[in-house]
Structures are given as structure tokens and as C-alpha cells.
Image (cartoon, rainbow, N blue to C red; front, side, top):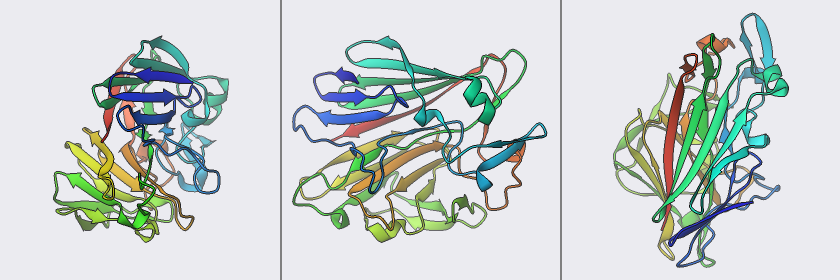
Length: 292
């Protein structure tokens, strides 16, 4: 387990999946990060790559061949290697292999950097295309889960979700596991929303952010502690908690990609939300977590 520390925060990261394992403020010792429970959700903060969400029939077609890939891709279940580390930051790396090429026929280099800056954890995903001839087609996203409520006296049904800018947003609905972006509804976030388990009976609440600066905040009103997730450049941010299984956790998920559309034809070149990285090019995707 990798440990990062500064005056404000102590963070732990596992090399399996480069997944966050713990986020604590040093002044209150509250554990903000969901600790995983197989009965509800065994993961904590998986990295979604090279797909976000589910593919139709867990498969896609590229260059005349059909490939099988489960929800959210394979990066979360593979080991990363530490390539740079100090007391307050670390960079981990994962690359393609014979196994990944069976499910995803592209060379890639995925680097994940965590850096503590005052009371904020800055996260950067770097995707590099090492191929000299072919573009890399992929999506990427984050899926951190947070303990909610954060006080023993609080309850899930008291937790508040607020966003900034506080305005009305288009919400993409899911039809089963697939997005129905052609038929969005409006979600009014001009005031904080008190959440419930039933809010997630149709899976994630997906905000269309359009790449603008967007912050989602979860607050436990009993002790007034919570977490800000700051994003910029994401097209969508998902907010999710398992349902009908109920657990005291809420995920805030910056996505640079999305599940297959209800009308998807299964061809990778047509898939919604995918990124194309030219040979020898690279791209960065950033967000930050600020517990309070």
C-alpha cells in the first residue's frame, strides 16, 4: 500500500488498479473513502479504462473482429507499477500486454498521478499512444465512492447533494445499462438536493456538464463534513449509489466517456464518447477531491 501525507491529508493507494484506498483529514481523522463491502459494492475508487459503462452484449466490433469486454474496462483489475514517488505524490503506470490485446487491440500507456496540495487531492490520468502508425480509441473515467453519512448519528436520507454552478442541468437517463442521451430530462440543482436510496433506482444520476467547470458536493448535515469533487473538461459526471442493495456510500464519477447508447450498432468507430489519440500523442484528464 502506498501512503501519501502532508499537513492536511493522509491518503492510501493500492497498486492493484491504482485504486484509492483511504482519504483522511489529519485534523479530524474521518475516513471519507468507502472501504468496500462485497455485500453491496466491493470496490472503492476504480479507474474506468478503456471503456466507461457497459457495451451492448459486453462486446464491440473493430476492423472486422468482435472483442469482448465487461463493464468499465480492465484497468481496474490489473496491477500498476510505481514509476515516481515522493512523500506527497505518486505516479503509477499500466501498459498493454498480450492479455489486454485480446480484449482491446491497441497499444497504450496509462499513467495515474495523485498529488496532495494543501487539503486537496489532485488526480491526473495521462493516456499515451506509443504506436507509430495507429490511433488509440478509448474512454476513461473515475468512480470514487465516499462514506455517506460521515457521522454515527447521521443517516443516508439526510445527506445533501449540491453542485456548482447551482443551476438546471440536462440529465441523461439510462435504459437498463445503456444511455438514452436523445431524451434527456431537466434536473434542477439551484438548491441542494436531499438524497435517498430511491434516487438511484434507475442507476446513476448523470449530469451533462459540457466540459465546463463543475463541482459536486456531498454533505452530512449532522456534522457538516463532506467532500467536494472538482471537475473540468468532463462531458458527464455521474452520481451513484447501489440499488436495490442499500449502502451508506455515494460515488461522484467524472467521466470522459459514457455507456453504449440505446441505439448503438456495436461498432467501435461509431461509439459515443470515445477519444481518438494520434500516434505518439498524449492526453491528460484531471479532477480533484477535497474533503471538509
